[in-house]
Length: 318
Image (cartoon, rainbow, N blue to C red; front, side):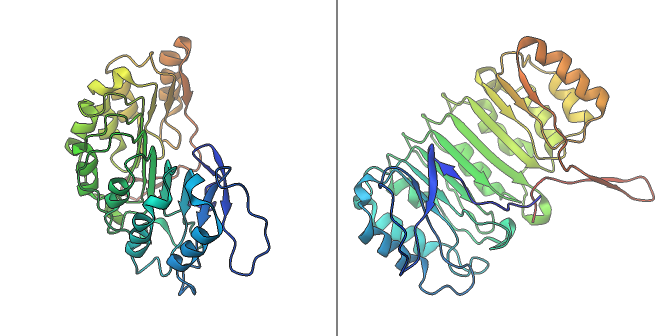
């Protein structure tokens, strides 16, 4: 699976792409949409920062609540350092900003694992009132530990998440965080974390308000499921998401053999490699308690070598 569609909404607001120069499109109210600012990903003229400057001149930015950063120029080779610098420099002009997504880039613009990223925490430091932050792309991504008192939702979408980012998130103080979504990915595209690196997240010590935990799109999904089975944080969750990865009967059985999950509102295991017998066990264990269970296999596919070795794949890699 690839990412073929841009975000349709952010912060509960419909996405609206700021038009190019010379456009005659009537602009919506500043606080009525999530503004998407993007340029061509190949040698764009003008660069993203110039389009952003034109946006700031055309829109009452004091009322803007959500921003979507789409493609910047040469996303394969260039990190969004200038983008981040421009956003932070404009922070006084964006007092109402509550949601920001960096890298709303589809495969036709740049495959997810080819998006060049950088240290994104200056955005969180620069916007202490931000409630939602998301980023796409793991190449060069950095997330050193920080404290942010307002952030409620953090999303990191990658085909391969560096262990330094996993550790940085786990070591961060995020007392308001309710929703954490990490796409761990595959070693083919830079994922190098182990289950032990997730322990600070699974303990929940720094995440007192966490209610939705997604550790997904992982090639070590069985090991993650086994760790989650005894993780203290699970007892307070409403939603547990282990989807999009290589989950097999072993991981699902470990999950069922651990702590009760009947308190959950939803267990999301879509894109899995479970047998029908295991899927039925999951349903029988949880659905009578009112848990919504997603067991759709989607496009999960496996290859088998002549020697019987089975290869399973995450939903989003390249």
